[in-house]
Length: 361
Image (cartoon, helix red, strand yellow):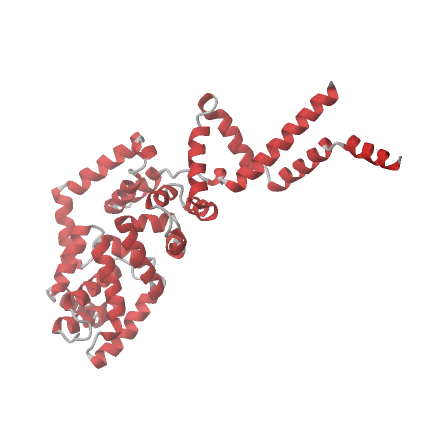
């Protein structure tokens, strides 16, 4: 009797070890934990970045698990009330006109509008000139953009074909500079281009850059363009970001951030997946994208479905919690050793010896 019980226990351990090992690598249950967006939202509110806070929280509000959060609903009302106030809006518009920078769309639009009417270029040249006279640090990138802006206004851009595209791209870059969202590679590119434009009075060199920025701007708007521009690393990346913005629109920024850039680097691999599935993966952060890319759309959706189903098994999902603990804390090596050890115990040695004995006869 004892021998029978021992073998049953060994069989259970073997089954459990193989199951855990398979589930661990096939479905990535242990890494798929959905993000609580209220933590990052509160951090942004504390920094008075209400526009960013709303953008971040609104992205997650499309998921049922966030819609049901009382805290998320409270934060949303707080942000909406703040951004809807007349005083807040007025401050941001004035900020955009007088300084050329703002964290709010209304302020950024007023900054760009001033650039279209030459006011912005003259304003920024005056500010940087004043810095120079007072022996203060001069922003060479902003100075270069303003100078290029005057060339664009003068209409010496026949090869580009349209002053509006040039002014749009230049204005976006100026606002990006003032909000610290111009990456280092772009700073160097602008400074180098400015020297050439000063000689030729022609913006041909900047045509691909200005066109890319203008395309993104038209697709996702100013605020998101600034954020997307800040994560670019070169012209190639900027072009890839343009493709991302074309497919995902105003949700591009959230998807790039949540995937840690994987949606840019793995754009071709994700092309065949449904946008709905990609968004679902984003709710699990970088691990969601890793699981999706590693296991494919079908297995990823199976994982998510099973997690939701298993989480209801037992009292308040206690069985699922135990299963998750085992996945997290038991190493692959231990599972392999247990599998081999129990398999050796269960191996029918008597049959093997019996065949050898019969063969000897």
